[in-house]
Length: 365
Ligand SMILES: *Cc1c(COP(=O)(O)O)cnc(C)c1O
Image (cartoon, rainbow, N blue to C red):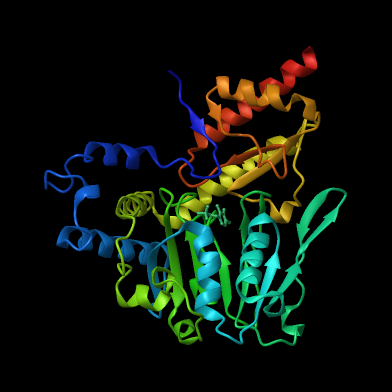
């Protein structure tokens, strides 16, 4: 059987080497004769795993000492609520920038919890000739005392990425679910970074939270204890039983990343992969993207066949060629190739080859 390349947006493919490692030690982890799924989260072996995972993540992302790293439940959406409940208190307001469907969903969750009067929503996408572009206004010109500004630097569904760092007078909360560890960022510019694990880290159910110490002093709202950042800090992310298998796999992915030379090396590959795909799409008039060059996501490449009546044929034949999960999100249609860290360059090359062959075959018929 020839290789299958999985372009699913999430849960997404994991590095083959990590999956093989997990398979090899599934029934006997660490020489204990039992699976990592079957041991106490408070055992010294599992604690050692969590300490190594945090140390590796801190090293990979150069996380400063005045930040806590939390491994929590509830994926990305769990954090939509946690951020509000942990930071807004009874009298806080927040600003939500909107550049696609996940940032809208985060704003809607905030409105649900604290009401419209406490949540300002600012659209930052302009559409020109069907091409989307991010335009961030001068935030210092806004006279409001927000507890935080929330934004999503990579919109997974829309394929829109914001590469420029924001200049914000308020602490920045960033939903990096789909681009965390895809390139170097300066953590010290953020108040809080969160990411559901299932795009670029590991299996679903786990979320990573990186939070600046001083934000934990903000007034809270009443909330479920398992989503309380202060309790998570106090209990080393083990206030209750954490998703241990997901944590273990995430730890293996961090080791794998270190072995690959870290995030800077990964970023080079990611740029190479995205460029190969966008260059091909730009080079012919069979396919098109609808995102301005400056905001084309390196992780989620959204594209369209100019003749959309061929969509189904494209999906079917791609699948036959071992290229799966290319269908775009139902809200935007078209195609989407998610090419996270785990996607090898060979997968992108195979996709470009298929797209070229498909276009040639159609134009000959
Ligand atoms: C997938 C995703 C989410 C939602 O994650 P869940 O774990 O399903 O709640 C939130 N934000 C972004 C940017 C995502 O890509």
